[in-house]
Length: 473
Image (cartoon, rainbow, N blue to C red; front, side, top):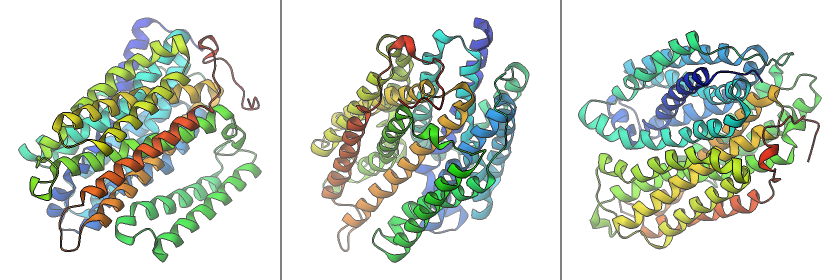
């Protein structure tokens, strides 16, 4: 690792933070505004849902590939390319007047998910060892903070301006961050020679794409339909073929030996379930609080008012994510991850049994944010602790993909539950539908806690040591 002065690392971290927040905002800002986008683009509910689905698909496919290319050709170089593409795609979305043009921009925006593994790699290569856990922890928490802030800010932006400003405003930090990163962030000295297994990349793209399409379309296709089952099974078969191709390749996109490391696969299992819970909250909480009183529950909140219920969550993500580095230096990375999963599960358990008063929803939102802030920050540190410096990009990229896939499942499953709970001739989901959805999220996070106990515990002094892929704990 190259030594760097405090001023240099502070500038680097600030710029990486700006880039990360911009990406995370673009991920969730559009969710509450989908009805407005649907109306202005003259499209259907099912079609406009692809504004989010296309983004998630692209992020899942491109993130590990970009992480691998960054490990090979330079993380700062790839980061600049990714940010320039994200700026251009954001302008396309801002001026789009048709759904195809909007989707084209969203696909390129989603591919910019490589921002996070590239940023994690730069921090690992450039920062002094004693600052790694805190810096990576805080940057990881920003993924959740940006997602929550996007839902909060979307309402006021759409109400007072238009949905076009959901794309113009993130350019305010994004453009200067791109320019300053080009000027001020040094290139990482760590390189991994070799090439890219493009067959593996193609199989992974098709397999992940099929699985996420099937899951994201279940509110329309339904879970038991032949179309859903066929696409889902087809995607799983292609992913099995991808794993086989990677094991046979001399230059795999994802080294399956790395994925067999106990600290990697167990952390990714928890990431899948935490992603399920986080993204489900973006569907469930706004839907619940916006339901009018005449349905027998809900608070009749506006889109802007619904965002206020997520303010405690967003603030808690930032505060608790920032403390993860201090906790990890004292206890290691595993305890904060377990504590985060417990807090997140407790939030959904509270919502399943008590949500009739506004303060109960606020408390649940606070617990959820605290849990996600702790867990998201800790899980990336756990991944980095278990792989070598040359594999930081691909390992953290796969962790981001796992969270995204879990999020796609969470959003689709809970939306499907609510859709099926609408009574004949009714307009709103039943109160029982919300109970089932919140209870399912609590159960998923409980499984995440159990999975977390399987993660090997490292002493704080051992964190971020040199770990070779061949070392399988």
